[in-house]
Image (cartoon, rainbow, N blue to C red; front, side):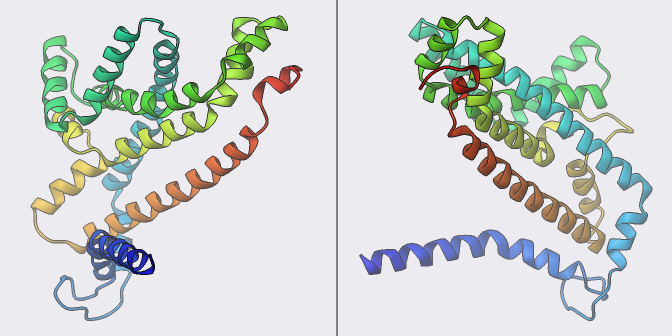
Length: 273
């Protein structure tokens, strides 16, 4: 047993080294005064100063954050409604079909999704830019939100809803004071997963981004094609640190939500345990 645990720990260490070694290498050379990624000649913050002095890049960062936050919020709201509709569906065959269609959108290659949206927006006469990127990000984030929220709904005991209705609660009260508080961890998970996918997406955004509008992933790709620049390293380092902060924030929010979730939502309405 001890040998198995030791082998498992070694395997995990190797996996994390393979995953994080390139990131650490990139971060290390973002401070290199030599201007290359071959030999570290000295410590400098020059490339970070270049990032913060680049007005165009700051605008692109703002664009990316606005798209990510707005699309994640709207996708989570739509995902809540979709998860509730699927959960309450009585016909098992139709329910499984909808779940399968939802899962297909998650595993479908981003290139196919991006090309499909490009054709759709072109046929509909929608100009490529902010709205095309926003709509496409909402579309591929909704299935993620649904798949995060639905398990929480399935864990909820039907007796909570029945007890609330027996006490005279309206449908709105049941939704806002029983269901939503119970599935709050799933809502947070759906929002943060959608936010991460939106910040990370390149393939879909590359297809639907018009001239004069860009996001960080597309901008980094464009700059990387022009040649190696350590300002890309500095920018990537900042994005990585921001992602780490998101993960840490998500951990504490989920921890608080799970702690509060131990109290049954129906109890807030005076339903006896």
